[in-house]
Length: 165
Image 1 (cartoon, one colour):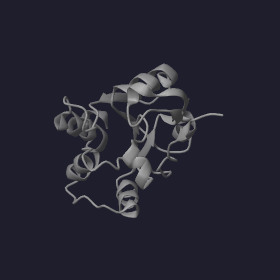
Image 2 (cartoon, one colour):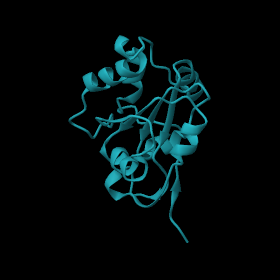
Image 3 (tube, helix red, strand yellow):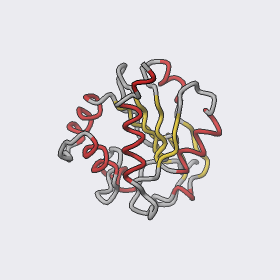
């Protein structure tokens, strides 16, 4: 019998323009059954702040926010054995079917929230045809988090360089 824990379904729609991929939901996220549920995680504060909006607490409001800004959210690991919330303890994992999501959306960029998400993504999907970037993890356990790196990446996605037109 497996001790695998299942993650969440992706939040996306056909207009999604950027996919933010994390590693796997934390214990607190699994308790509330939605992404980035640890109030100490910087994710929602960073993302709402980028768009100049006040952070909402309801899952429904967060989904509306993501859809309004054409952001898809998922984790690279959809099921695994894990101790607590530690990425380092992830074992016997199943990967998200990222190519299927890309095929059914308008995703132009993939932002990988942390090195675990990046390493697993790159190992399986490096040739996916969509540019991707390693982002500093928004986890409260990451002392090297840098909001400026996130802002620059989001600018690349949402404020396309004029020279690309």
